[in-house]
Amino acid sequence: MPTDAAEQRNFKIVFESLPNYQGTPAGLTVALTVEPSGGGPFMHISANLSYDQQYRSAALNLPKGSYKIKGLIIKDQNGLALFATPVSGSLKAHLVNKPLSVPMVLDHLNEVTMTLQVLVVNATDTPQSFGYSEEVLAAGPATLIPRWINKSLSGPLLK
Image (cartoon, rainbow, N blue to C red; front, side, top):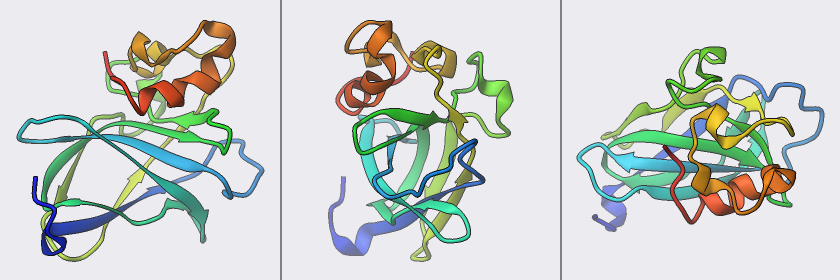
């Protein structure tokens, strides 16, 4: 994978809303799992969240190419999963307009903006209800929310 700065392309994720969220985005992080369209290992990347008319990630970069966003979780500064975008075919997929995976092409120098929806992660939710695999759990259901994101950044996200 090229690491030459001239081959890097910027993108950001913009969210229509963070449902029922009353706080500021300070300390919130967007964690993404991205797969190169031509195959290859999944990449786990993250960025801070900010608010300027909309909630948005800081600029992210990847080498020029085509990708699929396969997983997206917004966590707080303690690693608690607050929001997630469901995967197509999951129980919660019908609750968003564009469930994952979502294609993304980074071929121009202009920054690409991807607009996605997220749903609140409730205490009763499981990773499977969003289409994520059991492996994202590091402990039992009582610690589901704090463990969702911590494990998913280092292990598989998807079924």
